[in-house]
Amino acid sequence: MSTALSHAALAEELAANPRFTRKEAAAYLGLAEKTLANWATTGKQKIKYHRCGRKTIYMKADLDAWLAANIATHAA
Image (tube, rainbow, N blue to C red; front, side, top):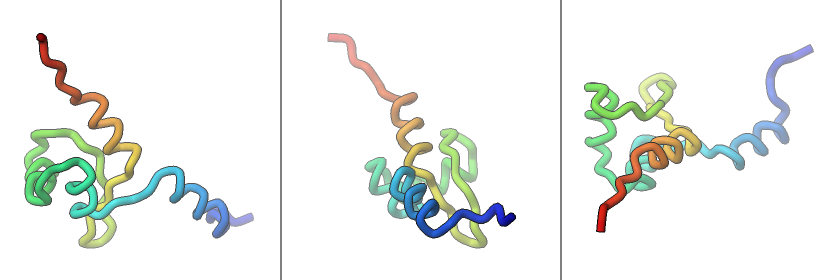
């Protein structure tokens, strides 16, 4: 039995949790692409990412989790 996902299961997974390039992730977060690259290199901010050859891939769920954990509240 193969452990690979069927095309339908993979399509469903991608729809539920899209993957972004570093450029797309930066746009989604409203940051510069170089900022994400710096954070990945220095560890200044811990946003989970995956390396796929020379490409860096971010999962939407990981970006959303980082956003939720880093919401700044301002006292009135």
